[in-house]
Length: 329
Image (cartoon, rainbow, N blue to C red; front, side, top):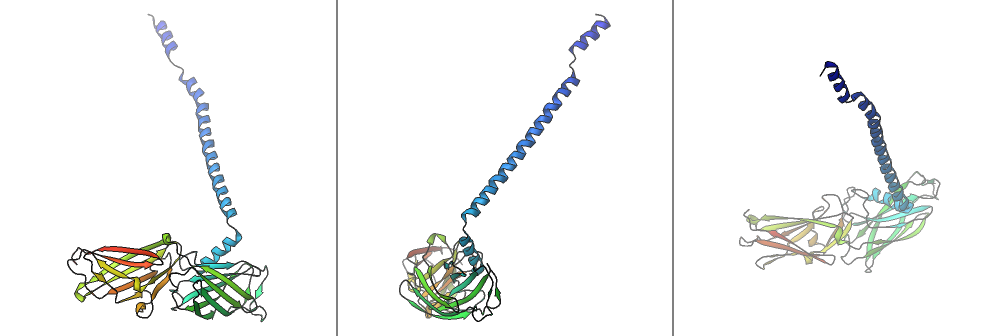
């Protein structure tokens, strides 16, 4: 075969790379643009869904619920916890009555505490410096569903100055004895009189949602001093009122021996409650180090005992917690 024939054959079989590359470029660019368009569309859909979800949530929350949330946020030690409360939505004032923890970080007071707050819903300024517009609690009565009447003192916050529309104000607190509500309580009826602003009645629910409680325990043995102690800590995702009769607290070991506490106390106040009171009680809240019950038992746990069980009743719920004692201290 001649050189000319060989060159002709090579020319016929060689692929046209130039044409192939030029034909593929528009296709690749089109694919990239399609992918970018799909990603942009997907992002737009996600943003639209989130926007609609937010709008839907806001649309389902009423102005009254938002106001109540603000009241909770002002009164709670942790966050906007839903404290036991009653609200009166009206014009010119919206009022809140809330049971707050007797372990207040502001007041070292061993009373049940009911807080009264207000929101200006009048649409105009209120001048608390005027004789006709000043506000304070002049009278308060508290009774529970069992017919127990509480002895209460009033602490006013001496509210002064301009109260602007949609602002909130602390009006005062009602301190009541006895400081613990009974385990059978379902609600409190609170009647207050406000100077220049009339009389108001609240019903504060105090039923227990046991599923919201979180309880942790510690056993501390002091065998050489012939006693042991048990601490129970109460927290709750939504504040719950805890009440325990000291007479309902006991310990039994795996040999059948029973132990009764020599005394119990609220760990916050440390005042040996059971020597003076019949009840341990208070609000279990979300924050750590809250409501804490401490009981001392003046008897060493025998060496042959492998476990002890704490038994008590919390507002109708029988509770037990077992501790292993089969290790050597």
